[in-house]
Length: 177
Image: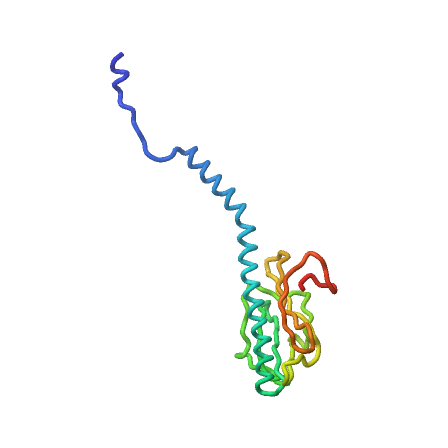
């Protein structure tokens, strides 16, 4: 009987299969809970960046119009699903090389109301920086869906440009204001 107590027990280091499976299951559940939040966060960051870029483009066109005392315009198009922009004097067609792109995960939303000429949306500014023609907004949304929207609004004939975001209630038929 004394031999029975003398038998050495084998000690192993690490986790058992059951412990490993439980850890993997918990990690999977946590990951599944995090993905929608992370996707929403990255979409919001991309939209914020796109909105800032559109605002700067419009302000640049306005500034160039005042400096050169000629009508300038900020143009936006959506070929192949990628939003592109160009700044150029009104009445000219920008060369393909002048078009720059926003983030590929961003699209021009149906709430966009900038004046349209063919496939191009535009806003023009005169020599005083005032809007030359129609007021409007450029609304951006994510391609993967969701309700996140960001907009840049040319809101007065004096050329006031402001930003907005999605809201729960409509105003003038739009959710982005």
